[in-house]
Amino acid sequence: MLSFNHSYACTVGMKIERDRLLAAQLDLAGAILRVERQPLPTPLEPDDVLRQAAHAVDALRDKRILGVGVGISGFVDATRGVDLYSPILGWRDVPVASPLSEELELPVWVENDVNALTLAEWRYGAAQSMRDFVCITVGEGIGAGLVVGGRLYRGRFGGAGEVGHFCLDPEGPTCRCGGRGCVETYVSDGAIEAEARARGFRSLGELSTSARSGMGKAREVYQRMGRVLGIGAKNVVNLLNPEAIVLGGERMADSDLFLNSFHQELRRHAFSHETRELKVLPAQLGSDGFLIGAGTLVTEGLFQRPALEVAT
Ligand SMILES: [Zn+2]
Image 1 (cartoon, rainbow, N blue to C red):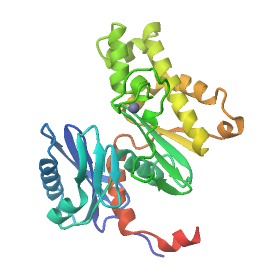
Image 2: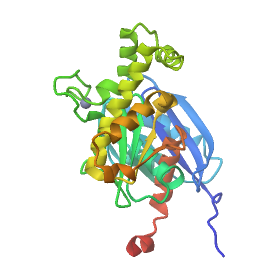
Image 3: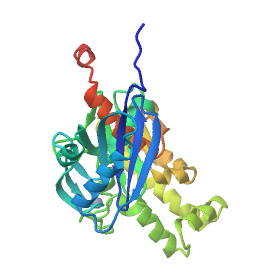
């Protein structure tokens, strides 16, 4: 009898990256209507970035905007809307929600970018209606969003899900976190690129093309990548026993080259009842998921369903 009018108004989902800012206008069902892209200056001064973020939202005001969701890499205090620590942006303790909200006169939510992506895959993508799953992103960094018992699990300071910093070898290469032998030091884009150069390839593109044409020394790089990711995922499975692992992030473009070794490693020596039923699913929304998830923060924030929460 009643249905939700998705075009009554829109939300803005934003992602702040190292060198650019993306702001999407979305309808209330998470469909992207329009995207504003703006290059960002270096170094990234928070005041400049927030001013530019406000301009990007203003450029999307041709429709009624209910609120803005912002995805940022690193540790985010989602309750206070503060970026606690983002190594990629070089920010520490930067308030984002309150200055932006004051400037725009709109409610603003801030969330870790991988958590935003996880929310998007949960509501509209690969993990719809699941109560326990983990979304792992593979690219410049390795991140994870955790949904545990039907809730996004952030941890005490928004630091949950740092799968990229699981230690594989305490004597291994130094990581940007200060530790050694973290998963990221083997499988981030930077690590794969360094390995490619060490083997005589000029770029990631040349490495993947050579691997697809069957060249052994190129294929080995991806096989090791799959094994390392598989070990990381197995640790997650042993900790949380999720229903599914959703794999996303830019490097999934090369998943044909590493997924086999990933599966082999994930299931090797694993507890059989945990992995037999485990689903491994590719993320469905691609890089749009970051923006869709950021916009979804607004709809979730404004249209919470307390009756449903009590019933479950
Ligand atoms: Zn690390």
